[in-house]
Length: 328
Image (cartoon, rainbow, N blue to C red; front, side, top):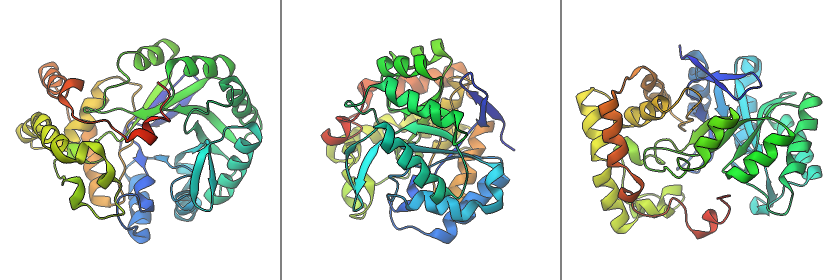
């Protein structure tokens, strides 16, 4: 069984590795509900009980999937979900963290998830039109009402993290962080350590790139997210394959998979870091969870740090439209 880790100062304790559920809803190829539900059940059996979803995954259908899958197992898991977008006719029209909208999203999510509370509620993206203090105050009210247990932020910068935390304690910040995406290291991670806030890295495997089983963007189906990922395209792809060679080399010496080394690297970065690799298949789930028992020496950690330093990774992590929503 997986060990647990604490996120923040308010008592949130979760499995040391979580499960990102986004890919179960057709963002990385066709969905397979039967296998997705089997994966969720297997995750609980193995002690990987920190499940990550959001209203925009689908939209809506990912939360509905969890609601159907969990049933009487609900009490065994910690569910994280997110608010913060305006959605109409299946399209994301922009950010919306107005207090009335936050409440509407939470009430709808509770119905989809078939539960009476969300364990960890994140603001999905900072809304530049709504003061962060107002957002934090609204979530604080939901906590006092018992509809939410803990408050989190996603892709927030240091200024907004501090503003939110001053109004209602932030237990976790979810952001992209991995061997090949290190933008948090200069400012955000030191601030989280100072404020005793946990870090939940999404895309800890570089959207699959660090698993060593990758193809060029154009070789993925039209509906696969990676087709539009700048780091999978053209000369960026070639440079990133070369940079990731050290991951593959260390994996070989340890008789492990490259993705396991990438996850082990994150776990070694600090006791309040809980990666949430996404998968919709039991095989990959079991592989990811096994990373928790891999030990990396200081020499191996340095080799990985150096091989995938920011100047060694080619291309932005998102296109221009997505990057514009990152609060940095």
